[in-house]
Length: 262
Image (tube, rainbow, N blue to C red; front, side, top):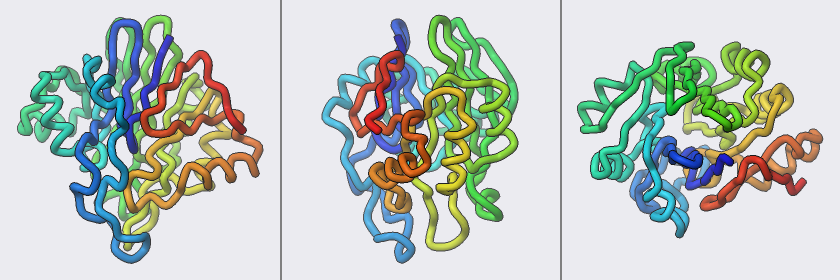
């Protein structure tokens, strides 16, 4: 059975019988980073919430780490310190290898877009991600998603910080992931368009998903206005709540026994 530990924002752990894969570790204390917006959304230091109380128990299990990109709400200084201290093997985009190696991380595997490699007895594939609508996507830099198939586990699509693109559509319709993890905070700076999927694209993503969708990247960074409760209302209005699970920070999902409260 696969267990998914939702930690905070995009940080989570995928736990199998033998491995615990940490995703995008933002492990710093509440309020250690500046506000990401000043006037579009209420100015608050980030992260806006603390780590869950069960964080140490979860982190003690970690055997690998996947990094989708180098933004501080996905990889902060405490996350880097943890990976170095424990010498955790890290998998990332080939475009991030040099920078992450320079920080002292143990990079054991890198991926290009649409490149499939062996991983823990199964496979992992790099999936293109576009971090924002319009010109802001160029400013946000390189991002990669992952499609993972492990032995005797449901397939997982980690879409990362992305808008809805042809690549996303291809994965949902051709790869048919059984579990998709979707960043749903509708993040936006004071300037430019949204950095991840709009509400309309979130709905489109869920409609086109053949399996369950796990929604995260909410209520932890001040430039993400979409809350869990607002998302639940939107999904119910569109009769899609049965396809989505929205975990609280610190919650553990047993994938074979997901039940929606919609």
